[in-house]
Length: 200
Image 1 (cartoon, rainbow, N blue to C red):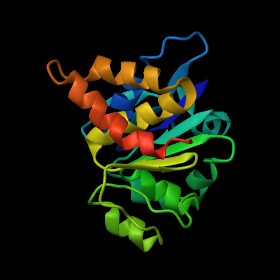
Image 2 (image 1 turned 90 degrees about the vertical axis):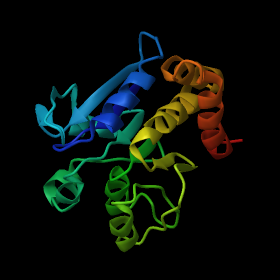
Image 3 (image 1 turned 90 degrees about the horizontal axis):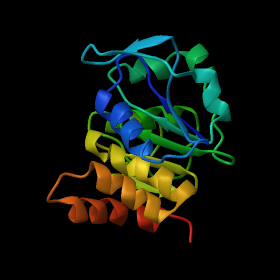
Image 4 (image 1 turned 45 degrees about the vertical axis):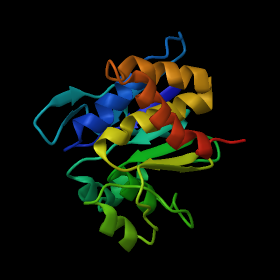
């Protein structure tokens, strides 16, 4: 099981690294979560440089993909060569996006006819791409999920875990990262968002 977190230059650390941390609560020999980048190294919006654990071309063969956000997403979607490197297919992959990552999915044509979530800054650009934006933190339609707001990243991670490992595993991963004294409330809130969007 390979989960690729697409992480570009100018990335938002909260989106990519929180999702990475939650997803890695699954301890299985074949469970692999990577920061998937267009270059060998990418530097965040706040100057944190990380090394790629997989390259962008590998996203097409991953079991699940989360497209992170950042301050240079509009540059990403304006680069045809870079966009061609992302061969995502929701018919065989779980595909999710966080904040401005939703704009990437919109430009790839993966949000046709379904509403999505994104952050308030990115909202007008996603709307310009022809996608209805919901005023909520998380939504999923089939194998495609989107989230809005940096701290909604645990919802995407939990959705991926619930879809692949089950609700008990998702609840356990969320419980581990939740604030002490708020664990039950945090887990219930997160599962309250994702449960209605899971296949029956």
